[in-house]
Structure formats: C-alpha cells, structure tokens
Length: 272
Image (cartoon, rainbow, N blue to C red; front, side, top):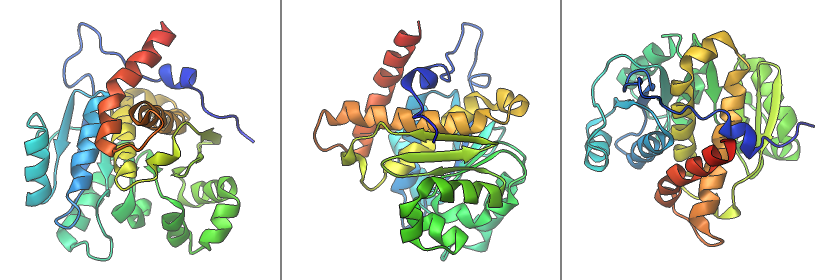
C-alpha cells in the first residue's frame, strides 16, 4: 500500500512566483461552478484558488453566483478568455443542469487543458480531451460506477484504482483518508481533522487543486505523473489548513481558506 503523501512532498509542488512573473505566467484558472440553487460553491472554490496562489481566476456562471463571487472577490474576472486549467461542476446538479450549461462544460472539457471535475459534472468525464482529475466522494463514485457504496467503503483504494482504469483519468476519492490513483501512481493523503466533514469542504478542495493545476500546466504537459501528485498535494494542503483553522475544535470552510496562506508559508519555510 502507498505511503501517505507528505508535507515535504507537498511543499515541493508549490509554485512560488519570481520577480519576472505576471498574472498570466503565474497561472489563470477558469472556474465554472455553482448554480442558482447552490451559489456558495462558486464562492468557496474561487476563494480557495486565490488563497492557494494563481495569477487570475476567470469565473463563468449564472447571474446569482457571479454576483456573489464578485461581491466577495471583486478581482475575479467574470468573462471568458485564456486559461491554463479548469475547475468544473462543484455546486451543480446533473439532474437539473440545462443544455446551455452542459454545452459550456463540454466546450471547456474539449479544450485539452487540465481539468478538475466535481459533483454535478462528473457524468461528463468521458468528454475530457486533456489531463483530468475527478473528485468524487464515496456516493458519487458509486453512481459513476453503478457500484455499492458499502463495497467502496470497504476497499476505497481498490475502487479508486478501478475508476481510474475505467475513466482513463486521475481519481481523487475523498474521505478521511483520501485515495489518489492515476497515470500508474497510487497515493494516499491524510491530514484533515474530522471536523472537516462539513458542507462546502469539497468545494474548497476543488479550488485548491484547480490552482495547483493552473500553476503547473506547462509541466503537466511533460509529465503525466505530476497530475496525481498535485491531487495528493491539494488534499494535504486542504487538511493542514483545516487543522490550522480548527485548533482542535469546529472549523468553517472560509476559516480553512483563510488559513491557506499561512499553511503554505509554513511549508515553504520548511522547504527553504
């Protein structure tokens, strides 16, 4: 069984901007998440991506989540344009998704860029033309594979591997122990306090991972094994920030997000 992905390995995968970087070279993440029913997912994903470190976030979505995202983060660019990676599907419901949204998701998946695919867009995994990370929890993976959730709970590592083989993608199976499988790599991450089993936690994880993919987009094109390692690093960052925000007690997702910069700074200090 794979060892747990470490803080040291995570620190090595954090992109630190240099004096010649600009907002484009630092990575631009496209975000298509949230819905009229679940607008908060868009806010949490954008917040998490920005606190992890990207040069720009482009948000494309319905009016209500767009308004909330801009109120919370006015530096968000609410317009289509060049991106290095996509975060898709958080806060959407595939059963109520309209044709216009589905077309937009499929266009993003067809661009050949690295993509984080979550929640209400998981059914579109076969449309991806580039490096793909799907981020289901146990119930979502059961629906994707038409499997018994109890069987997945009994052996999550095996089911993550089965899903990765079937989808031809990296699978990040969420849980107290996160299992990541893809490109022949099998990893585990476990740093999150149990307090993080809360609504919106996965939306923040998607934003963290989306940021890491955007900042490493060029390197991903040269090394497919980087994608599962970045997925594991996102899980570690998510857990460590949750642990910092919790301090042994309850934690909110915005509290976790607020703790990301200090968590990253601590990891970078250990790397130095």
